[in-house]
Image 1 (cartoon, rainbow, N blue to C red):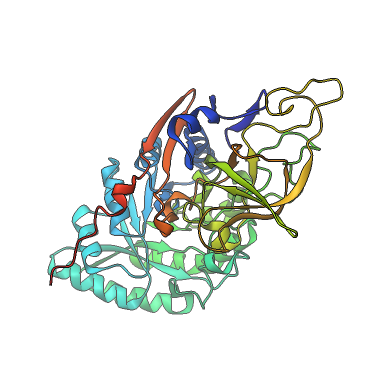
Image 2 (spheres, helix red, strand yellow):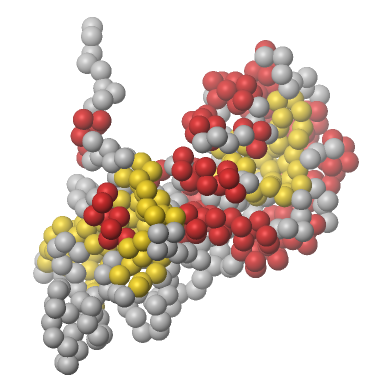
Length: 448
């Protein structure tokens, strides 16, 4: 599932010792594996080979230009949710005609920009948006290609913040109203009906919700195919990844989780293929986390060890401003030492870090891994069983390739971290670390 592994007691990304990257570029540092991203894309593409399909990467998961170029070269299209993401895709050399434009609050400027660039389709989230796009396209003497985002009212069994397919969510148009809205759209002079779209949520680890949603919408899709000759049915993204056991190092090792894993790409495709095949349409998929989530880690160093009467804290140099998922969602990220930590066996003599590379069993204890941000919510793990850590140790926060850097901020006036990409035995910087001077670069003194 990814290209992070231990070799001689040290963590590698593909063929690069991650310590080398940390020493070269500093910490906190996002480090990504190109081979993992491309492997996930290719496996999904291959599994769907019997269908006419297009994989449109959900740019919001990770927007770095180097990653967009990787996926562009692999043949991906792109799912965008803002004018800024469209700009990034174009800047990466991708074709806007392979972009679908989603989002509930598209602005006049964004809609104009997308029309000028020739996006493949606007995903319409409301009747008000449909009217607005028709008005803007009419003024430009253009026809806007659209697909309604249809809400199937299916429970995705995921976190409430990333569930999007229920009737109480802000996304999409209710299934029972969709046919009438399509009829309205067909009479609009500046609208061209191109397809149907759905997306029920993110980090979904079972096939059943996907199948249920497809089967609920399929009759509508078949009807629209006859009435309006639609070209595609987009089933969105949302397939989850394993946030636990991202490094499987053999039973008995402290980092091996016993928790369940989500379904594989092949299991997902096997489940959705029958109802999709029957439709006889081009199928669009919009994965984000699936492609990049397990392809990235956040490297961070231990600054201090703090013990109180109730707790032991490991204070690291990364904070909630660098990776907000644990604070925002209570999300789990596996955290591993870059150098395996073991106690020396009776026969071995201590060396280096007191026998850290010697044979033996790892001593563990419960700790909180926390950052330097001035908030009690600034944590990466609580009451986590971890080996004995010391100041200066390098840690890897796993599965940080999606919704990591893209959600980072300058809270507490902390500069944004650097990003680097590994390909084989090479590592390259793909985003410079923000400087202190850049924190105030865009601020302007008031002139009254």
